[in-house]
View 1 (cartoon, rainbow, N blue to C red):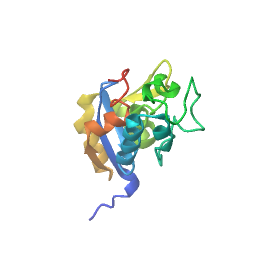
View 2 (view 1 turned 90 degrees about the vertical axis):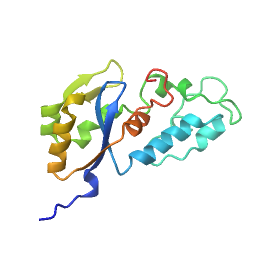
View 3 (view 1 turned 45 degrees about the vertical axis):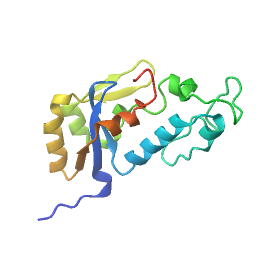
Length: 165
């Protein structure tokens, strides 16, 4: 008997350093999302930041999303950590919150604990020591699961955010 692996059941996971627990992301889009986050963080001027193409995420430096605090002309220096949504921890969205949409509810209840943050909502805390059992359970249910700690932490903004870093 062959097991069918629908593309929606491809997960990447890793140790999210901010919350010191496991986090999960959709393996079909995670790498592209990480490229978008990294590209915006690398922008040196407001013009560059506005031009970063976002397919999976909103661009918090885009004309529809930022509240200018001072001179945001295209040639002005850009620092991603000065964006309100980044300073408040709203962008990128906490990677540890994605488990609510990605993991079956019974596994969320069995392996994780819903935790709240003061400003950014709830996340699922999945202790590192549950990794082998949870991954085995997911694979048994037909999920394709791979571990990539670096990718998970880029998705959490760890590459640029001093609050996370």
